[in-house]
Image 1 (cartoon, rainbow, N blue to C red):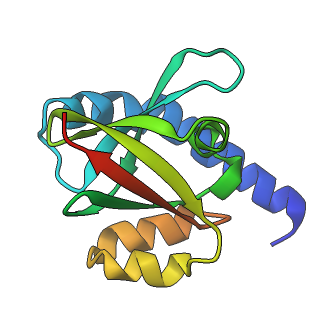
Image 2: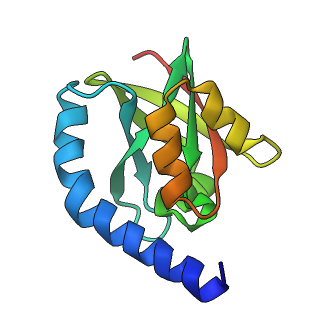
Image 3: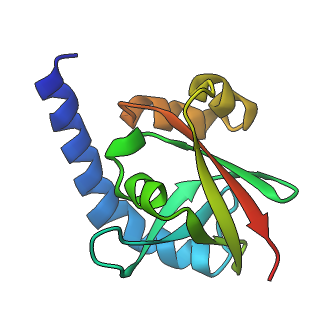
Length: 140
């Protein structure tokens, strides 16, 4: 895939997710109706405003893993780079967390470890730069 094709794919995915899929998913996740997905609240690196996005997260104990399909091209990943203190809404409950970009992690293998084949297939289909993120969750 050429650089122009990758950028076109990224823009299309961003539009579909941002305007069609994420708005109803945000409500469903906030109400605790959707398992395997969470809301991540970051602080905008330029505006300082709260930004919320829906992501698929695999939670084991107090550690959550996300494979960002657009890697550092995703706004929430860039916000985490600037400020790793985030909030995560898991099953309708908000928790504080510290987020880490794990550059040396095998994102493909991490995605397979979630044991969610449909989710993994969609991330691979729509992703252009898979990147692993670790969230150390704190109970409130």
